[in-house]
Image 1 (cartoon, rainbow, N blue to C red):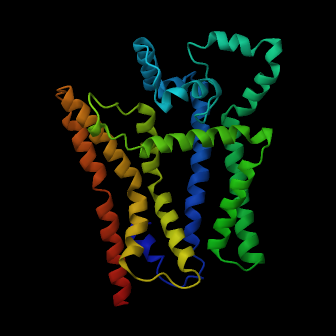
Image 2 (cartoon, rainbow, N blue to C red; image 1 turned 45 degrees about the vertical axis):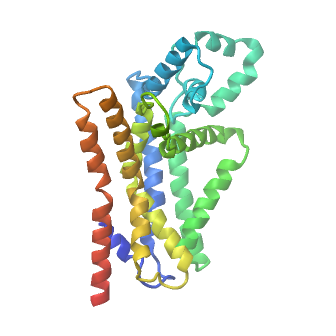
Image 3 (tube, rainbow, N blue to C red; image 1 turned 90 degrees about the vertical axis):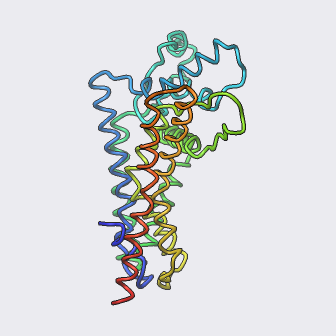
Length: 314
């Protein structure tokens, strides 16, 4: 479904079915299940993917330790939790420098701590079961709210999201790993939007760690979800009236869909700046990538605007 067709779904009866809104939670559920399959393959081939994703952060921590500096980035403070609890969605991976802590965790006196670590461990089985549970919850919430209660698809979507949030926030030991993974996602999201105004400082700016590039690319793959969220809030704001055929009705969902690409373009500009300071001959590659990502907004807006013109003629 093209972005123009998506925007076209906004204009019309606000109390209509709007079943296309079910796409965003379905895509998120599928992403959780697919990540569980990735975790299974990583474990099958004995790939320490947590160490791979956090390798840049490990190097930063080691460099800071060599310099003897006490001021470290928040990434470095979270490194131990990422490496020891597997807070990046996946199985627990032990850091190469944590043998002593592993022995302490296996000691008899620390059996309770070991149990808590097992509850927070993110495994492939947990991710797949969680995705199937979310899919069942989505089906039950939509059928109950739409067919039995007679509500709208917008209400069913909000009920689903509310039920998921309440279930995660409940302090149950069985859901501790979900809260750990969500905290990691929130922290990585903050790092993506953290401005880091290095232009006000001196020296070479901090390079973008690989985990942030990986996370931003994953968000680019979910840009349709961001568009649907923007469309959902538009429909909810004007409900039960139809969304007015105005410019902001096009721009806001399109900008929401382009946010991951803008974040990725900014990362490329930061790396281009670092390459220019280091006289890197390949720095132009980062600029080309920045141009590629920054042009994502215009096709979305133009195709959406075309849809509104078609609707006006009809």
